[in-house]
Image (cartoon, rainbow, N blue to C red; front, side, top):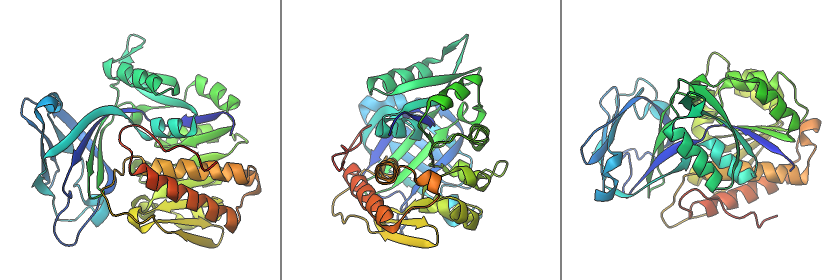
Length: 363
């Protein structure tokens, strides 16, 4: 696929695994979403706490060797606001013993850079012309995984972190503490990087940054994998960037919140919408293909399944029809093949722990 440049975040993730569903009761809900934290405070207790503004209170008792991660995360919105609406009165309250905890590299940028073997352009915080301690850890871990990086240093900002909660029932709730990501802007160096690239991937980078880069009108394929903050950005709506996007991939919750779906469908050659155990939909032109999920009867680790699906779909597109972005359309056989292989790879991802992706042996 040549040289792929990825604009996206790399975080230091605290990944918490639990053995029960996050939202018990009726109706049963499985979370697959992110939520912003207004702030986080370390404490000396033996648990991680997540508090919402309307009464959410989730506690995660820690194993003895992980109590240095004890902290309280204060959410900027209710846990179920994205799923049930901002006016929902339903709260999530419970105690969820932690079965496993690991600190690892995270963020869509890091994931797509590893899966696509590309170069990652990401922001880190720091001062005096060097990254802060968390930024240095992020850069070190990216290097450990063999990811080529070009950090963008934001002086006076703090490098970003995440709490990622995973349940054996398939829940994924990522809670982000963001400082560099929300202040990341284009620099002169970005122009030179884009001119050397054969493909661009935007995954969670701010819409304003994406708009400025795409205004240069690079004549290469552009993939976009937005986070919820991209979908809900009213200052630079994602739909305004549709004429420059060739492949859009997002989950069902993000698609449901996206304004201007009709305009997206008219202007983006191919869109994939993943929906966990319900499989995925691929929308192209006036057509739609449903890709069933691979049946599963054992616990799943859903972390990075979306990145696996999106990166695989893009690889198949580029292998089967390298000029699809110029033609502005794709055919049903290519869409079906890309969706089927992406679904199979995503299913394999469910058995992986840590920061890893399945081999591309389908190639």
